[in-house]
Amino acid sequence: MSKTSNQSRLHIPEPPFRPGDTPDYSHIAVPTAHTPPRPDPLCDNYDTQEHATGLIRVLRFNGEAVGDWNPQVPAEILHKGLRDMMMTRAMDDRMFNMQRQGKMSFYMKSRGEEAVSVGHSLALQNSDMVFPTYRQQGILINRGASIKEMMCQCLSNAGDPLDGKSIPVLYSFKKHGFFSISGNLGTQLIQGVGWAMANAYRNTDEIASVFTGEGATAEGDFHYALNFASTYRAPCIINVVNNQWAISSFQGIAAGEGETFAARGTGFGLATLRVDGNDLLAVYAATKWAAERARKGGGATLIEHFTYRSSGHSTSDDPTKYRPESEPEVWPFGDPVERLKNHMISIGEWDEEQHAALAESCKKEIRDIYKQAEAMGSLSGDTTVDHYTMFEQVYEELPRHLRDQRSLFDEEL
Image 1 (tube, helix red, strand yellow):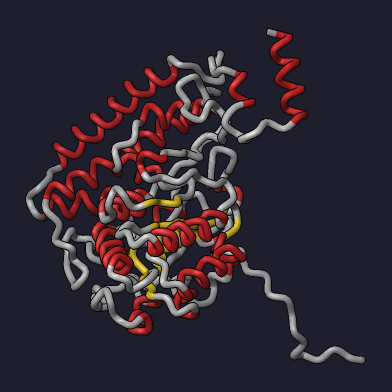
Image 2 (image 1 turned 180 degrees about the horizontal axis):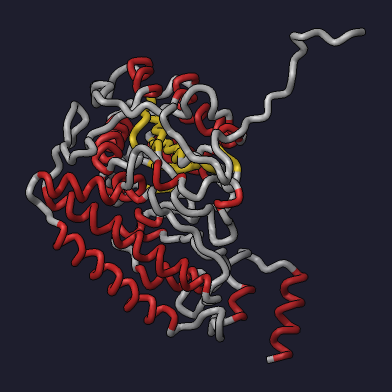
């Protein structure tokens, strides 16, 4: 049988640019009007359909804050948001460099995405439980977690509260409402929705906020979570951080060439918002809206944070192998730190001299904290962690084969 010209073919998604190409983002329209409008938080979920395909923005590139979504926060919120983002970035830079020096095995930066974690955290109550991914360290910093303990977890040393049992950057801080991070994105989605359902059953006003990347929306856990969140009107926020890249595969592999990731919530009957993830005020405003909806019984909201991963996926990744080296510099929505800085300058709350001083102060503070953390051990020497703890706090009742191993360990000691 002869082949016809209209023969079906398998479509293999390809990123728009490859190494060596000149990246051109003219296909991404940056909205000039700061729409869509802000509806009542208890509106019908179908009233947010245009919010799933539009883009909520507050900060213009000239520093102005405009539109229905402008939260008009007090100056202290702006200052805290800026400092927390800069502290997150300073810690990332320090820990990345220390990994390159062999002081730890692994690290993951959140450069370019700081507004997602910090802006979101600013809008929540500290009693709300967060189910994060490995790029939400800004939430911990915003909530006042010990940076030294975070560093010790990365160094897997004697100061590590997890006794070296976890991969670096997979933080666990129960006292700060920060659920243990799963390295396999997607698993925490249904856990977070379940936690929210349990809270609703107990009639509390605490909500859950669960994060995933756009790549993990292709996993079954994402769809299970949306189905349960919609069916039981779970008081939670489901955050999809669309930073364009999942490890070394671009968003198209997760059907990102079609409708927006936020639109997937519409199909499940959820309220949906799509927000400029490099705009701290927009992230704050969208989170406040979703949190109010959840607390008042309106159910879950899916938020897509449209942003860009400026650095590699991790210290094990070289992004120049799969995308142009200049791509981060031409991302059309800019840098979240610069955009908030420009806004604060435009309203007379900041200036370039203060900004330079804060950057230096954050760098020094992180350097000093790191010295304290490294003094408790690192991979380049002795981690000083008690190896005996490998047998503890994993099983309620230690299995026989591990009891045998522990006996051998005792004999060697």
